[in-house]
Length: 302
Image 1: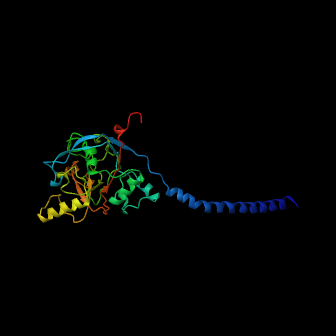
Image 2 (image 1 turned 135 degrees about the horizontal axis):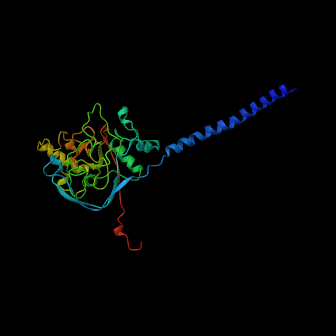
Image 3 (image 1 turned 45 degrees about the horizontal axis):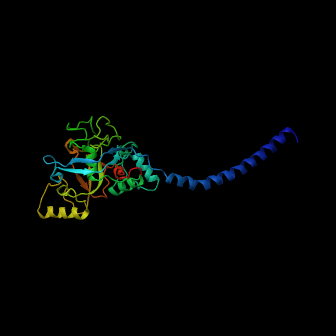
């Protein structure tokens, strides 16, 4: 056999070896694919970025401004808790979807696809599922308002100054506007360091919408009490009690904080709006909260 024949034979042997090696590699990849997919579905929750709100009293509601469902102004006392520094982003919500713990938000156009924006087009149920995935929950209405107002009863998270576009995202046309990436106004935090509690998106909270809730603030809100309050308003033919929204006939949930399409006056921290928990609006998102263990109740040395 001359050198040319030897070269051809060697090439044939190499080709056979290469094909033989490729077959088990390809088979291994096929067997590994479901495992890789499962690992993607086990996407871990993002690390919490929250601020601490200390235990103590705060002023809730308004007597002179806003709607009748914000009255009366009263003092509430809450235990310590934590609340997300910013609204939940689209990027983090998508991690929950990949993990199989959340469902997809409402399909929206390119204005709402920036991964740094707050996720919008999610219902109260979807927001609740995400917070459970990260080991948290939606804030109560009182927790949300204290995080925004602090203990001094301020009108807006930064104080009494009427909002400008340097302070918050609001006043945009619904046809063309959109929320900004979270944390876009770092110079105007709440008293505890939370951002975007005024403007950007309306935020779902846990509570059912009860227009009389502030009359008996120590009573836990329930759908039964909320529906009774709404029935009383209808029976007395009261209009405008909750602003421009009509009186609901079902148990709705509260949203707080104002949104990118709202006017500046609506960004006040006592403002309450409500929608059916199944609604997936382009101006509504959420943030999560978590209870804090009561270390004062622990026995010394424990």
